[in-house]
Image (cartoon, rainbow, N blue to C red):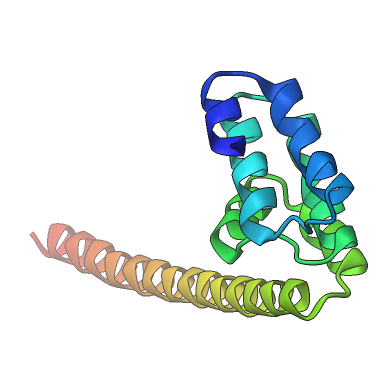
Length: 141
């Protein structure tokens, strides 16, 4: 139902669905919140999308892992906000997976930067040796 409301650009309807579910004693799950967040982001409503994301972690299940990563890459401050509010076992699992992913990407990025620096230094060294060799050859002639 959320997917249809978002696809038809009926954002106010989509935003009301989690509360309607709660009124019927149905707990919105991670997919419910994730679909809503993704739809709002596609529609350009980042303010509501971020508010729903935080509410999803405050209410319990959070959102699906891939949705959480996508949002946190776009809005890094959301990671900490959601991390502070996560209490449900599923939400904590999403946070832990994301933490591992971000740690791994920061490590590989730092490692890549280190390799780039080593490559650049080696390239400069090789070029300086080449240039000094060229200068020596010109002097001999």
